[in-house]
Length: 279
Image 1: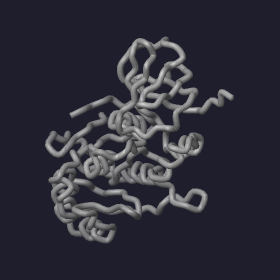
Image 2: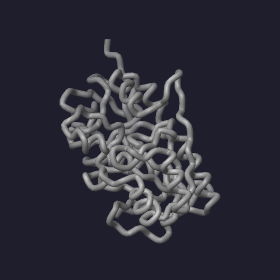
Image 3: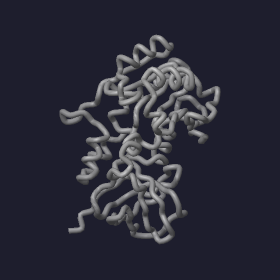
Image 4: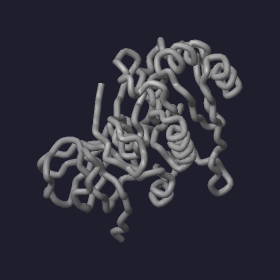
């Protein structure tokens, strides 16, 4: 279990940020949340309406604001040898959710048992019994349960019988197409970093490990831009900006900073990527 104090944000709920899985205790104050459902591999602008709607509904119902995001990502479970694809690592997601004012992160382990759960069992044992949700907020393409057999129609019917509301929001269309994590990954691999940055609800951050020589090591699952030279912001574990640096991104999921004037080694975040043309 993990707790972090969230700075006050206007009239939002002033309570701790709690992370729970299928086994850990849920604080009484966190039961009965308004829960966003999805994978949320990077909280992009397509998710912003879900966050805003969930926050407004949580205020109306005097409920905590929660979000579900499985670990590992289902794609990692079903294809562990696949190419790096994640927009945000586990530690990066947690920081983003905390910064956006969520009170509860439900982070179940995605394993064979969870993947094999029927849609009815997910709604009853997870949403109703374990989380005791007052409402869930989802995108129109949300699927759940074994082999993604559960759809919006199923979820609405389960909500009616189990006593929770279901709010369904449409996709965000950008340049005539649906904004999705898949689309953002394509932009990232092509080096279209302005489009990537503009697509995020907060900002796109990558968690890294830094050593005393300024060597940067990225998570093996992290989707990265092309090899090259970038201006970036270095942030600490609380996502406070420490400095701006030049990063030379190498093959092999590592890079080198232009200087070593860091406050500490270990886990940091890198954001505000901007490519530098050296020619």
